Length: 414
Image (cartoon, rainbow, N blue to C red; front, top):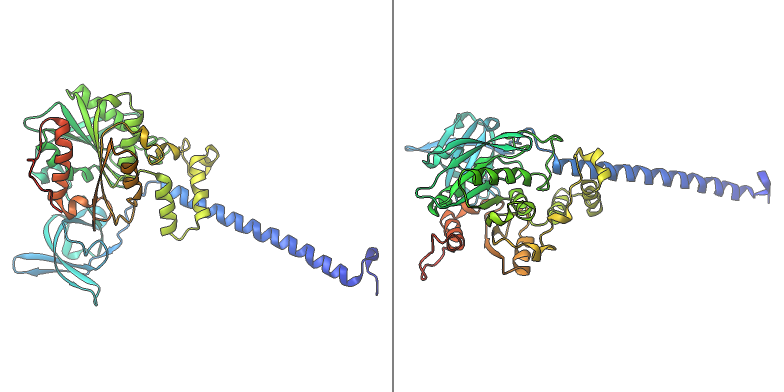
């Protein structure tokens, strides 16, 4: 056999050379894969905590037609637009707003649905081409026919606007309404009539990064770990102006914020109850769900969670401080929740799965009542069945206020 350099057989030298090249290429590929994984995880983590500057107009407005004196809109048929109830259609970047009502026709083969336009509150719907679907039916308290006071709450980052809607007569308990991620304070207006009929003054607040209140110093969502301090300021406002205690109404991330407030507030003994609509009970579960929805591998999603929760991840996420995801896992912390809590959550919620809500109630039945809805998707339980939503809240909360109780033979709507 011919010898190569250093006495290695030529064939063996060739094999060794290619093996070495394979190792180098393999290491390079692994490095590229690791870099790609890190980049995807970083993108995922940043999206979770970064407020969107512009709302995506993801719903086409196919046509607006007149039927006698009525106005109707034709939309693509999807899981939202084919559910009965009352909703909002925002268009022209949010400058336009129409209230959409009953379904008049649904043609599955054409993929379209026609619905009533109950009223156009702003803008020219006839010329609109795209918009977005929302459960926030009311823009202002005036649309509820209720007088309100524009007040300012002094948050840690500066003054923030709020609506104060008084009950007549009023109890000493106030409702504080906490909206969800990417929403604004008008989301909570759906609960105001119910709260008012129970005798509660309603403080409909804004908080950091929602476009009404001042932005946080880092311009990032804290997923409840930071925002609870803004609710603390709202509680202090209520107490200063005569409240003896409060009930926190929280939607989606507003539910996570409310739970953190009940846990951390120096006024926790003044929080009489929580009424949570489609709340985030466990952020780890929600983040894993969204990774799956976006076809992100589970390992990459977990890496993104690590970036959010580890101090070294701050340079990537832009957070001023790491987010303690474990402190917001109320399934694991179930026995620590000592504030009476009503959870209303649709079993087909596509954004925040209902499983942790049901499990929290199962683990802590003394404090937590779980009321499932269906077909309501995310935070639209009121929109699908406002009568049932109202009755559920009144039946549960009224006795705790000592002001309202359904008759013993009353039957809640299905």
